[in-house]
Length: 128
Image (cartoon, rainbow, N blue to C red; front, side, top):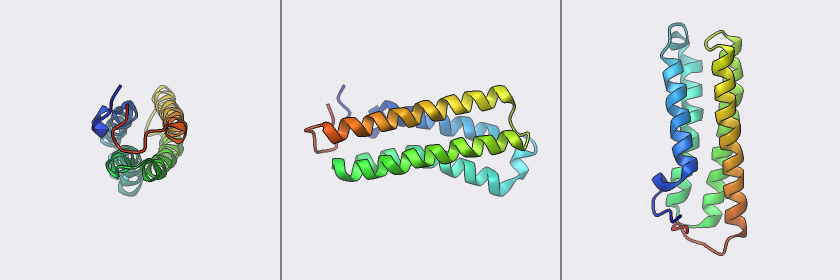
């Protein structure tokens, strides 16, 4: 697969899906009134997709790896905040399990992509 745009990356697509899911949950009654927490979890989930995109657009593996590391960290932050949303009764157990699955899988895929980039001879933003 050749990725000529960040939109071609599966990890970016999954991060976008995660961000949308988080947004949808924050629109619920009670969650929507917890402005600070709602803003924080939307920001961390959006940061995952945004850092993947920004790193890709930097045109080099070294910078891309740095931004992927930040994206992976934001994914972990989002996962932690999902527990808080559950503890605050904003989401139920089934929803928590779904979000934990999404964040854990995405984090693993970002890590695997980082390993690929570190071992790759490709040095630019157009990845085969």
